[in-house]
Image 1 (spheres, helix red, strand yellow):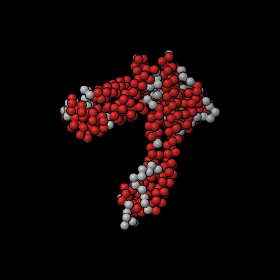
Image 2: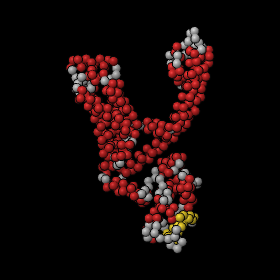
Image 3: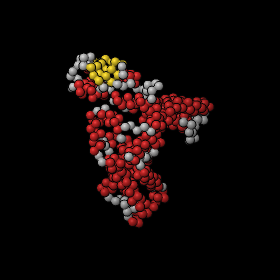
Image 4: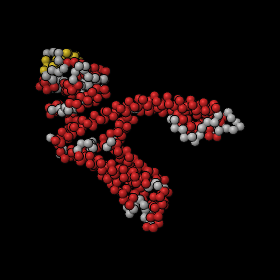
Length: 432
């Protein structure tokens, strides 16, 4: 800001805040930081409601208590709702100052989702324009670009990205699920001994590769891969941000599921149609088994799998804790088990516990209470140790699993509310 004093005063609903001019420049609230870019009083009045040049005071006719909580967020980095204030009213204040719902604490985000789900609130066009203005120059440019896109492009994007956005999206998602199930069934059936015998007979009688397009299984596989490839290409073309599209985990999984097929086809063209050579190749076997990644494609259409992925991403600390709770007792009990069952009994040692790595397997199946029965202690001290191993496994594994369970419930409710809100907004857009 090229005018006024070095100290700027913000008057929000009668409550005054004094800041140096340099602080205003990099202020976390976008509406306040815009004051530094104003070159005239006219531009200042576009940001605030009134301006006093003599005192260098900016007036904002907004809720003072709500701004006080927003200032606590600026100071401490945690944003929560004002007690006894409507969540939607506070959310409007957040939008005015340049904040979004993602800045709220998770508990307050759930409260906002519940309130919006119960009230069926749709913001007016003026509020939407105001929110877009506060997102910065880059996002404004992006919004302008999106407005220039045709309506059919938006509908196509919603159809491929949101399975619950319309009837066409639901049909498309159902077809994609069917192709995934068919490809999984074909992959499982191809490992059956009878199926392999039939493939060998077809190779001897007709002389073609069972993975080629001349074989029924090859045709089915080619159709499934063609569908997945076309779906991935269309979604890539329809995406707003191509770089962000490539970085998404589900899109990476799609690429890992599709690529092995084309690699195997390329290797077939280079090595010829010698199926015996191909089946003997370890590389082709690994590539063919990588088709199991198609199952993860179901996460795009089912909320439960999305909840599982979100839970694992948020609970990585608890997962590390769980792994630590397994590894430490495993090292202790395996060493003791090897000593009691094999090291001390020199006349008739238990050969199942000949080494500590071998005893680790027994510790894992005992702590998880699986107990395959392939190896077990025969001495009295070894059996006592086995009982302690089982009891410690029950106690230690239950501790971090409790945190993971609660995180799973929170992630499920969060995704459920997001899906319901997105469905309502898209449905309202199509009806208009």
